[in-house]
Image 1 (cartoon, helix red, strand yellow):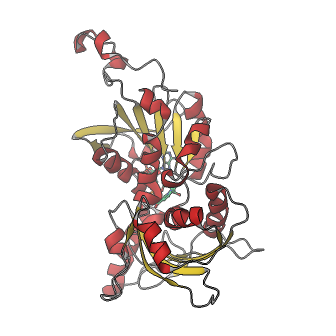
Image 2 (cartoon, protein in one colour; image 1 turned 180 degrees about the horizontal axis):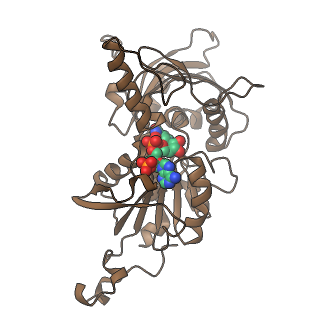
Image 3 (tube, protein in one colour; image 1 turned 90 degrees about the vertical axis):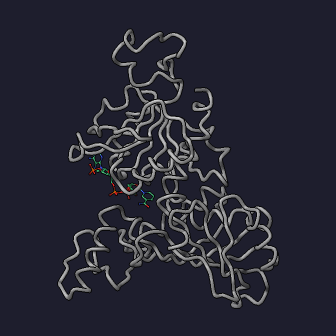
Length: 366
Ligand code: NAP
């Protein structure tokens, strides 16, 4: 899908003779658009592409009309933000979407029609059977099945599944129970601001009326701020983790129980994870598997009581895993409990999406 409009360098003799539309990309590298470039994830797309040396011929920075004309910095250059419109994708090869489900539903098909490959961070297409739902450490092979859109999974799902996968491959996990401790950053830049501002107001003895979150956030925690299904009692975040686990593991029988909670942490999600395997499983087996698992770092120092924490996970690519121990509520020896932490703006969003984009065959061809 990377099309013939890449300008072959050898054909271009000087900038003076280049047609105007070619001026910005004289390399064979793809034109990359970021939709939602001003958001919490958008900022991490830029930083992640930069530090991983992702080859970009030209960056197109897209956001709402509110941001039009402002600039973002990419590799030392100021890039002017444009308002997202139906014509934004005419010269684009790869588009990273991170502006919410309704924007993705409307504009991702337009981007695909214009010839771009879309990596979408929203939940809009995740459960569409024709859309691969990819964590590269688990199912990178699914990328080749895409028909224009590849979905990035939910951040709470990614955080649990990266370390569960190597175990599941050796000794099938029959059942997993997950309790999340989710940071403000998972709800976007405005939620992070609200946590800071409400904490400051609280410390100054001032009243603060929540604008983004449904409940007071400073010195409080609450059930995840997505809609609750009145019949099941599960919120949307929990339902996403259940469904996405089955799709990514390609295992409809895996039993998943989840409780998602928002905690007053600025960045990086934590999760308590207990899983039951088909065959007996020991702490040592789990430690050995995780010691060599891609995208996982063991942080498990019982002597120092040092385990995964959001402050350590923030800014890190790996999912930190610790408190690996036998689940004493299962005397059969089939169950293990552990505690994980991951920067959900990185592995839960921007990093995972850039990893997918790095593996696109279209990009290799470029
Ligand atoms: P955010 O900080 O609130 O940013 C939202 C972005 O969307 C901003 O760049 C905003 O641009 C843009 N936007 C809003 N309305 C728009 C419109 N009409 N047209 C074009 N752009 C528009 O949110 P976020 O945390 O980055 O999350 C964005 C998406 O990623 C959501 O779908 C979220 O579910 C998903 N996601 C987030 C995380 C996470 O950890 N935060 C993890 C996984 C997936 P303006 O600044 O111009 O308004």
